[in-house]
Length: 476
Image (cartoon, rainbow, N blue to C red; front, top):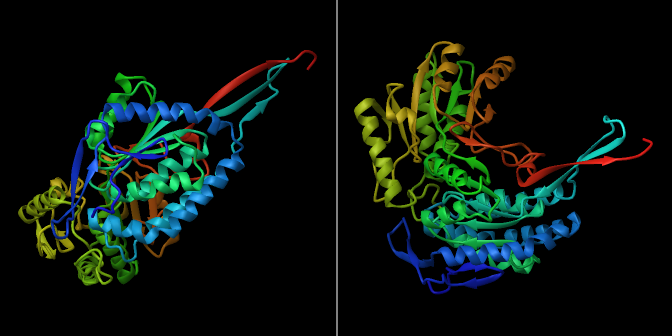
């Protein structure tokens, strides 16, 4: 494993942590030691902030087309090395390498924001006599992105691409569970043409994130992860310099299946939603509300659809479902499996097949007050409820403090749009389900699922400050 890159990437240079601290990474499939990764401390964070400060103004002064050209070169490098990226993620967090399109998807995000970065405009006004007033948009300066372990490269792209397209410098902190793909692609930052200090990659656990969140010269932070950590970042911002914060947090996503839905298609879509990445997805559809007339047929079809998943080594081509990311996550899933068995009925699955592996599992007859129905599991576990009418289904879906994603299956277009409007969620799939999203639409959550949005035609707005200028003109 000596060929695996494990160092920090500061000022376009790989470097060990100044204090010499490291943390181990283990393969969740077989428990083997993969690597010891450098952990950034206070001195490393300060070095990254200084490098970002030195580089950012020159970067912002470039023409948008110049920044875009560099971003597109980086996107192409991501495409070229997508296979290695997938293999590294398979080793550290268990996502099957076969079918992992995160490299190509992340490249598409950089391409999308490269285009947006060529079209940043302010406004003008002649509504005040004697003045021509204008507003302009300017980058924050030094920004930070803190990313999760379940989609390392995609989350990196969601934050780094808009940040640099807008003219900022950004420091990315990887998750301590899955840092290797970002460590690997760091070398292509310089090869694409990014100046030193514009994109930097730090590794570390909560302490590293805390140092960045509290830093007085960081002006913007974007975080994807748990609601608990998101709250801590808000507190850190408030206690430091009131830095701008965007949060994409947890979910407990509901799906409504009406009695006129195509049962097999709905079941297949819901099975993929909860089984994708072993259920370790914030938008996974984990609460299903099925009309009572088709409930039993749907549960049978859902169980049949789950048979498609094949456990195994994430590096094997035939594996379609890998392990949970580590022992801690496996313990969490097992805990909620226990809750489900106490509170309801196992309709499919319900077993651990080997260490860190769980069968895709369906629970029925779960009370709405159950922890399994209200708390995020982050595993291949779904609860199926019955409902009688549309109003009841919507009410039950909305009885959650989360609001990240929802879905509805019906052949009635009027009903689909009516229900989609009433669901309290940042995204709604109609006759489709998560992980369906689109780069050209905003993504984010309602309620405790987050603050602010990423992506969409206004995707640069969270990374830009507005400035109003009042220009007195004689004779106008």
